[in-house]
Length: 333
Length: 306
Image (cartoon, rainbow over all chains, first blue to last red; front, side):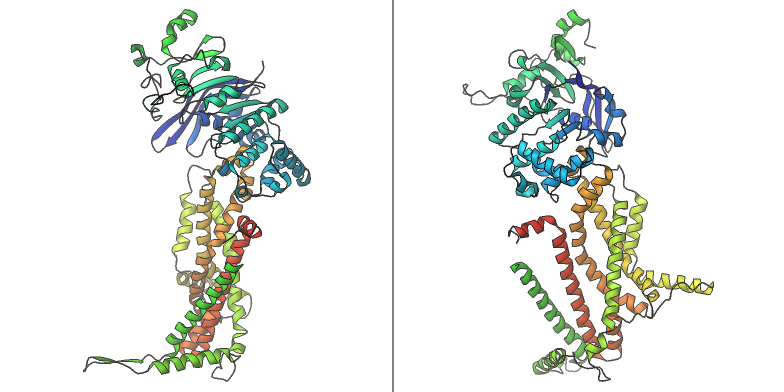
């Protein structure tokens, strides 16, 4: 299957005073045409920074993409000029952010913010752009779209604003849609509505989706493949049909255990002990080794590599070194 | 609407209180308090009735149609008629210049999404803010005199006959507001650049210029206009210095000059017009700040504003 996005050894760091935060440290993954890939992980694991790196909107002046390649349809986005990137952003790659209430300009009408994309990328005249914007509001199930077109963001609910954000992201029919925790701030009913809308629109426009979330329920519902991130690194990458039965990395196992089951009555819910690591220092060892329940002696000496255990299932853990060695030779260096 | 009416009424009350205070300061003789050094007692040379009489007399003069008369018998209103526009021109020109230049300098000063802010740009603003108007005025006058000595007739250093005479007072008067607006603009722009909707704008492919003009400045403008309230008070205070320094026959100059020669009723008239000008401009700015803000306008349409 043709790859639409191929990220290779991406390193995005933040330089704050004399400290360097290794937010994304050597991340590699790819997304195929029409595929929904989900990145999961705790807050601070580098999921959003990965998305912002793809979009080229790393918070300035502190954030910098240190190295790596982001190939979008075979072209390296990191080699493109700012002018070239503005032609891709919102047009070929779109993003929907986590906080809908803060993501729209409060002093610009919803309609203007929507048709701005069309005026920038499709060079449409106001009248034509207005017609398209209202049509898009209809598609995302906004009630009374003509009235909402002239509304200001403060007049809309969080769910409705998120639908507007989705409309804005899709108005130019992008090839890749990034949903950066797009449903986190919403109630479950709106969440379900937004997700079914995304699925429906994905079919309609045949686009690929990068879904960033820490909600495994959502992942199970719509993703084709899952990437587990921790400490700025990819710890595991697996197809969705393996997420409930064949997860390998202790961190992913821990994450799965964290999902409360309605049939099990427990006094205390399971949680992974410890805290996410300080990203100020660069990891020479597995970033999860301090919290790992299955930690072995070798974990204090080596940084595991991300290796393919079986088809489409990659894991970064020394526990699987035997199998790895069998298949690939010594990889634990 | 009710709020707006209440605001106008409150401004009228302010003017009334200010006017009473002004009348008392100007009209009441300096020796209304007498201290007996031998007896160690404090005596008042005027009683309550005298105070009330003075105030009543002043109000009678104000509301008799001509605000009283000058020593030459001319009504103060007629005397003020050609003077008021001179000060208004100076104020409006200074405000217009400072608004345009201040916003431009603010855009230039702001860090936007760059790593560092330019210290030199910031320094020029801070220096401009710290220089007193009298110093700038004297500096400009000295420079014009120096040019005149070199045989160049650039600009007149005082008086009022033509438009040329307004240039130096306007420059002097608009320096502080320009720098103040630049500072407010630059800080507001930097603050807005850190907002998430700017990230959204960049994320949808808006160019740097589009982000600045459509998304940042539109958001910053109500805040910049809001800062005019403070600018206006400083502007009126500096008007006294500038008009006196440039011998510019406006309201502030007349107020000071007439007070110094004992024509107190004219001084009160000038002060009254100055205060009316101040409150009227303040009201205009409030309206402008309101109508420039689309959210407030929309809330007003929906009848939800308080």
